[in-house]
Image: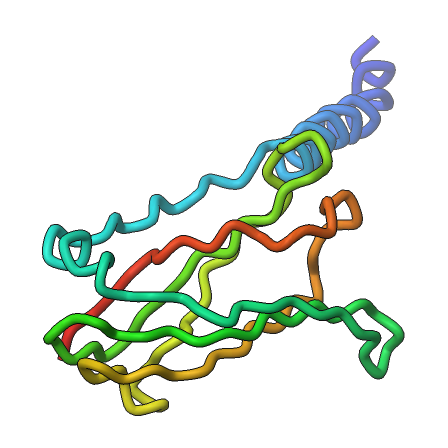
Length: 151
């Protein structure tokens, strides 16, 4: 009797390991990733956003070297206020034909490397997108100021 039990022990251990591995695989594959909450605009930035003006915004699509669709949004941002901006980030929000969100991406349109944005100044920006889901409705995304930092 003891030898029968010993003969099945490796199979029992293997079965338990397969169940644990399958459970771990299921957890990794089907548990949605935890999103890191975005920091909201500071009160100072919220009060200043009305001074930032987007203009000449246009969207075009082309194929890149790998035959993937590349969507580019070009435009200008102007600073009608009286403060120097070090950086400005914008959310581009893409929807499907049913109005459901398919992509929300935050991108810098002004940065310290571009010299910031002085009062009364207008700068051009270009935002490339190559990973927009196919279910996108092919319309201009909603563009919302996500962050503004002052110098």
